[in-house]
Every structure is written in structure tokens, then in C-alpha cells.
Image (cartoon, rainbow, N blue to C red; front, top):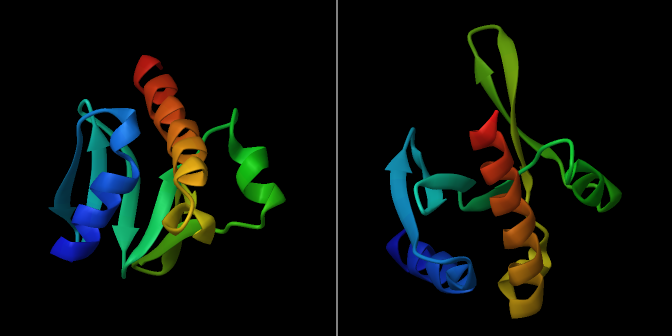
Length: 108
């Protein structure tokens, strides 16, 4: 995970001071104390809210879902598009969408 974490920090470094913290068998990506992405099984999920959801749904990027007892739980994170791994401009665009959602979530 450490090589992947280093790669993700680099891909999203334009956002500011990005850190990766292990949590719940995966990891959270944080910028200035705000979690804007999570990693589970080496899949990156970005923060989604009502303002940016359409961009994720347009690309058919599924939400993060985990099983809790007998009920599935859907979190406000959707799979990141594959292009963020190869295209710095795509990483910049999608990372900014996710961080903006995290900022808006903090204000509520």
C-alpha cells in the first residue's frame, strides 16, 4: 500500500498537503484535515455530494458500498475514473471535485 499511497499523494499534490491514513482495512486521503477520498482494495473512491454527483453518474462510476450486518451501507464516495492514474489534468479535475465536496460537507 505504501507505493500506492505515495503515488496517490503525488497525483493529488496540487490540492495541497495530502496525507494518507490507514483506516478500517483501507485508507483515507486527506487534504488540510478533510477526507476527500478513500481507498479500499486498492480502488480509489472520491467524495461525492449533490453538487458533483452528476459528473460521477454520467461516467457510471459506482458508489462505495460495504456490508454491515444484514444491510448494505452506501457512503458518499464514488469510484474514481481510471484516467486519474494516467492523466494529471484528470487527477486535478476529479480531485478538486472531491475536495470541494468535502469542504461543503464540513460547512453543514
